[in-house]
Length: 439
Image 1 (cartoon, rainbow, N blue to C red):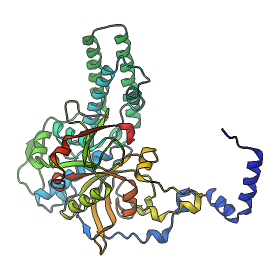
Image 2: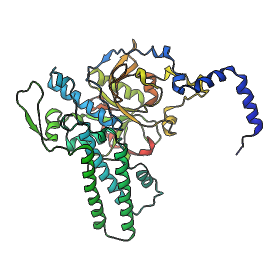
Image 3: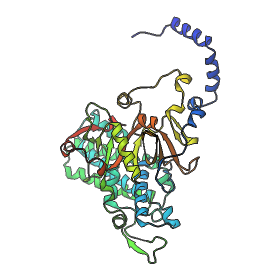
Image 4: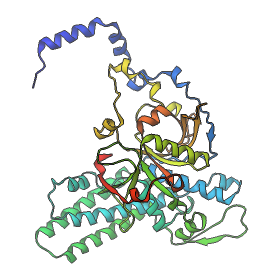
């Protein structure tokens, strides 16, 4: 390898000092974030909060200090469907909320169960095996994907927000997760130890079952104990009705979630376009459907998003959200930032290289609720219901330029009626990929 020499250093110092622009930027770097220096207000004005297709939706929801954006986005889609079906304009239905804590409780319990099952499955495997290392490195997190959301709702139902309201722990999950993961790793170590000693599987399963009971108690302390039944009424109904969480979902949403397919757009060699790909070694509701996506070219994903929005159905989506973002203006737009001049770096690369080389990851779920189409019918910008909070210029709704969409959008949840052209034969083909391929 070639070393850095004193001659090289001196040459570059002289070149740096000779350029006046460097001293100007050095002063700005000393006072501001690089993103603020690179931001161009005039270019941002080219992305107005106006959309030719604009679905009327309810107030945005805040996810708090918890990485549960995927549950927020899924529940936001559900509540829009529920209120639309009720056809009411009462204040309650106009700001109807579903409980985040309720579904997050079951998510954490299912993840703990899945983690311990994996600990048993891998009990005799080396820590150096990639799958084993990945499970123990990340352990239980707040994050998740569409299929897992759907399976949680199908198994446990939903409840209105006031039936199981937010707690401090549900909105601030770092310490809860740390405690849970410390214990899960400790139990996993115990499982590996007794397996090494040659104890039978019944003893190992008993260790897992006793641990899961303690985890259930801990989660109840954090979230509250989920209700078996509850009484609820919308404002203009005369009589209250008693529901179980599953009854509530079935009565107001029925088969709604089953009509959707999660589409991903990743140009990887092992993920052919037009076919199903399955995400392996990822948290799931044990016994439920595996996490799968239909991989399509980005232009097809965009076309289907537009069709769905035109039909008045919002689109749950996932993106690498922390790039080219001006939170004060609630704007995602790569053209509003001039990093080339400010940093000297040109960041342009293909989508394939960007995601395969880990320049970006699938990090955030949100919901498209509108799009602005130009005279040629092509999208220019998108309206996004985000979950960062209800404050800000557009009360939690963001503008997303189409060029930003092209670079950083990864997946979208689309109704099956928009993908009928995909042949049954192709859908039967399944290609495996790993969680570290997108995270």
